Image (cartoon, rainbow, N blue to C red; front, side, top):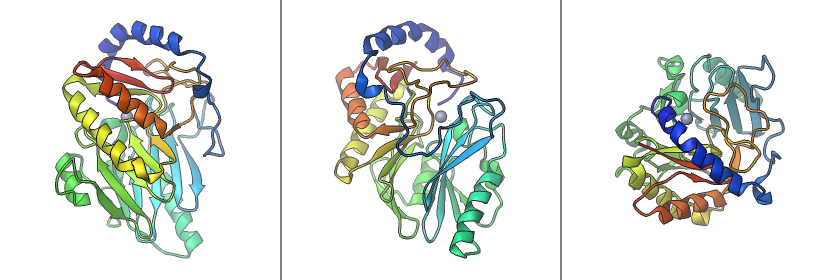
Length: 304
Ligand SMILES: [Zn+2]
């Protein structure tokens, strides 16, 4: 998400959001606070100080990393996926800290386990907003690293996407073939990534437990992207939707105030795959008139 445009809009819509949230309170299916994937609770600014970054290993080749809300209020998540030939980092954080030392350390640990000396790193982005690309400069100039560009044409060129945004392409990490799915709408260069190893759909800021900001002029583009990703992933048995922020509390429909310094009682990061069809249905029902729509664990949030 971006920071500039949304504050004014938020004031006008906060009351509507609250009203809708109250109507949703008490849905037992949504009140989950357990963390089925991760061993630890995510750092959430409730202890001061907390580490600048928290790394959680999910399997031998999969790491999820959170930037502390104390370094930047966006507190984004980064994903590091290893194959035998290369490793992919999705996103480089929101700024306010150095990211590369942590990434280098994780990679060094993985290499040591394998008895290997190096592995090429690809730095790609869920999308090109500032809270996901701020650490790119730390990686520039490293001969072992390729940083994917920020415009849709850069992303298309790197992943060999011939027809943006309708082509869905494979990207092989070596024994781990990701699918790269263009999903413009929240931002023009947005992608989702399906990973067959975890069966995760990395859904970026297009679908995560928080406020899904879409400018009114991008509504159709966003809806088309959600339709496309839904039909592509339908046969894939996606396990979880893995986004890039948490802005919802464990109370259904309740989000944190924007720029809050801590997230007590934070909802889990992972969303059930069914939230994708929930979003799709919600957008379909809006017809030509996008409106604020508060769900138990995400909020569709149109912006002027
Ligand atoms: Zn964001």
